[in-house]
Image (cartoon, rainbow, N blue to C red):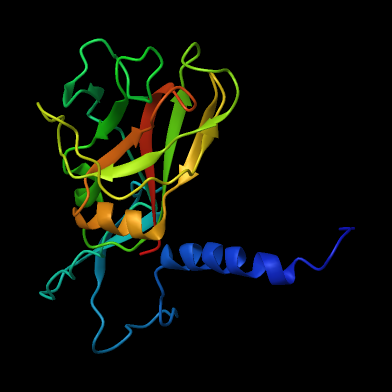
Length: 233
């Protein structure tokens, strides 16, 4: 017995998605019959039959026939529902140039030497993964390094940027800031990117993510930056 409210209203959408995915793996057969006599015109004799599992584990049958009917086109390949993109490079900038003393992306200024901004770079991988598909969501994962700033939770000030690789001069910030996630020292977390941001990254009008803050309050060093992209079609 299940306690609580009727789950129909809240579970219907997820059940439908599961059913649609299952149905997409099926190949319909319009009719199936048998007998001891020849089936008549329009049929061709199967000389051999093979079976296998495809990359998704779905069973497939292949019938070799003795006639001259050309082979049908192969069924379209279903794209993966989720793709994970890892940053190919990352770093920090201070005073309009790369900061040689910062091994990870950093936001803010702890020592009075000037505010840092950090960035993650993905080349053209995000737009390439999204080409021809409908993106339903993008999530990014971060880890805050222990020993960087105060121990309490502080927000990441996230921005977009337009670089495929680290610039030799200043890292110019795009849209932002968005405070989508707060992390304590040593903490990990994920954030869902706004719809406008995922559209920009999917189209290639934006290429990566950055962080920037002023002063000591939200100072932190951050690693990670892995982006998970979910597709609906």
